[in-house]
Length: 558
Ligand SMILES: [Zn+2]
Image (cartoon, rainbow, N blue to C red):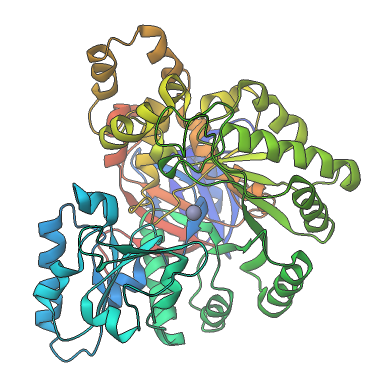
């Protein structure tokens, strides 16, 4: 007899046939039956809990294969939380209210500020210190941007950290100076942030933030993630307390300017010390280029505007030979690669290096991944398949968000922008696709929203980008280029489930609803196949089950 029976549902199994069944039975955390309602009777005893799904949909537990943990949770718990502030007034009010409510704090820290909510000279240099001085003249206020590439300080914070208008910024850093007065602006960027003393969190504070993160993820139906810059030690502590209820593949960033062997030695130490049943620390994250917004993504053809001078194509951050040697060593020593590549030329160069590495590593099963892939050269899709490289995509970004599309994508990329954030092309080329949010870059990692966008290439407004295309005299063939990147519901569900499991060598344990696998699954409150695709993001998770145990239940805030 089984512990739990689900019947009368639309259970999408994500098996190789994309099978759909009515019922499933679970015992000791494993799936012991999938099939029709009649067959599940044999697994139903007096002590079996039976859930009548009533036509609702069940999918395998979701995988987010590129996510930052605990993301915004430390800020939400302990600091001024500016992640939701949509304009300067809201941000100022949030900071003011926080300080007023906590008059005894010696230093005020905040995070999540979007620097692009400001305008004019403050969009260029960042918000001015005077805004903070007005709220808090006598104690330091230190606010970090949501992209972690800059921070905003009041005069007291600059003073306490010993920063003056004459301070020389460290290499790769910027101390913004007011060009009119020659005085400090109140903004430090990139490596200049090293000059500031930030709050260090205790082990318990970190663990509480991880628990909040896990709770959020269970609420969206996730039972597994690939964590970027994984907090390995805290995860082990959480696991020892018996409170870790998700699978984690941990990744660690390698830098081109640090000795490669030292970085391998460090990572091996982490792997030896902190690997446990649910946590594997065996992924190397490498940035090979930057982002289109800053003109640092590496492109085949120059930026139309916003590059660093005419003909600027962005930056490739690694020497190809060192990159190839790093790939070889990684795969030979049992590490997987997770490679940030945004520009089309960056991806071509990464594929070249992976191809060169393969000459040494042979045809081993390494499951290396390239992530983001905003622009991809047409001839490169097939190379992913040939080299067995996985494409990790963020469907959340695959629609024409008015602010980004009009201010960044179209002016910087022109015609190419119509081909960005491809998903369909990867599937058509037979590439293994995985999906992720890059939370907190995507602030709400609601996979249902990602499914909706992947299927429709659209978000809140069903006609926005088409209207925009028409207004700007852009022809139908341009729209076609974007529409061609649409995928089916089952394709994108596979990316979020079985393909995620495959990408981390977990496909024999989980990722699909099949007999013998762990019972990692999600009950949704509706059937995705039966509703208007543009309303898929309204579908909610009712229950998340991890290894047979309910870890999230809607309405239960516990
Ligand atoms: Zn990321």
